[in-house]
Structure formats: structure tokens, C-alpha cells
Amino acid sequence: MLTTEFEGDNLLYQTGTFLSGFETSSTCTSFTLMELSNHPEYQELARKDINSAIEKHGWIYEAFQEMKYLNQTILKSLRLHPPVSTLDRYTCQNYKIPNTDIIIEKGTPIYISLYGLGVDPRFWDEPEVYNPDRFAEGNAIPDAYMTFGIGRRNCVGMKLGQLLAKVVLALLLRDYEIWQTKEHTSFLDPRSTFTAAGNGINLHFKKISHTA
Image 1 (cartoon, rainbow, N blue to C red):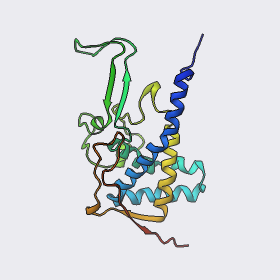
Image 2: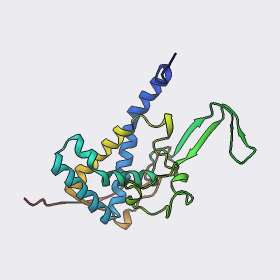
Image 3: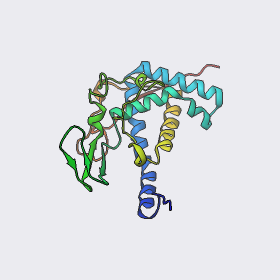
Image 4: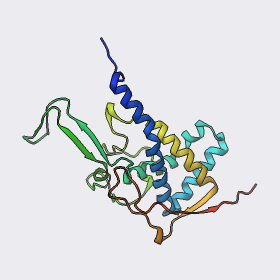
């Protein structure tokens, strides 16, 4: 007899995770704007991507699906600034780490640092560099990219969260040039459970004049 994982308490927890995803989406959007404000060349490419999709489809779902470059900027920001800094799991059975004598016993809590994986030079060339081209179609993405989790336990609200971030970014980048000054450079709040800027994210906006 087949059973589903989405029942009982697990269904309740997944529902809570799905709804709480709006907070992580706003974090993703904020840090993507921050990165693009400091990389005007990538901001302009994202803007062209947005305008092209909107002119072709209008403000409908298909347009956001076609915003490939904008999606690359989001994925890149999530690698450097994962909204949730740590994944926590526990082992369902004993596991022997390959090429070692170490056995992780069943029921052992496991904590994975997404910040650590995101800047690990074993998986990423120039890990501190913000370059959306790394996530272009056809480029291999290491399994170390776990911003949404991985496998059967990955985030159930992933697609909704990405869509929400795209909508907000498209609305802003289509009509505004955005930049950040040195005195407003953001830094992470080490006391925060989730990713947050200790001094906020202060950006400047300039209205773009659209010509007919």
C-alpha cells in the first residue's frame, strides 16, 4: 500500500513552511536588489530581459517564465545570501561516510551551513564574485547549491517564492535605476536567525523615462 508523506503532522508543517516562504522571498528580493544596485552592468541586462518579456507577453505568467536572466540574478543572490542560513535534518538510518570509518547513527541531527557551501572554493570558482552568468542555462550547478534544500525534502514553496521575487523585481527594475552608495554599504546581522542586514538595505532610486 502506497502512502504519502503529506499527511498528519508533516502536512501541517509543510503548510506552515509554504506560508512562511513570503518572508524568505522578501529577503531574496532585497538582497538581489542590493547586488544589482552595486553591479549596474548586470542590472541593465536584467532590465532588458524584463522589458523584452513584458513587451512580448504582457504582465502574465508566461512573461515571468521567460525572464531567464532575471532568474539568474536571483539564483546568484541566493547563493551568496541564502534567506535561511542553515539546513537541519536528521538521519533515517545509519550512514557510513565514504572513504572513512565514520558512521552517522540513525536519528543524529545534521546541520548544513548554506553560507559555507555557497562560498566554498571546492565547488565555486571565485566564490565571492557576483556573476549571474554562472547560472546560465547549460552551466552545471554543483549539488552544493542547496538554497531550496535538495531531494524529496526540498522547499515546497520554491516556485511560488521565485515567482513572487520576479514580480517585485520586474516592477521595480522596469521603472527605476537603482544604486547604493559606499556609506550605505550593507552588512549582515550576526544576531539574526535568518539572513538580515544589520544596518538595513538603503538604496537610491531614479525614475526611468520611457519613450514612446
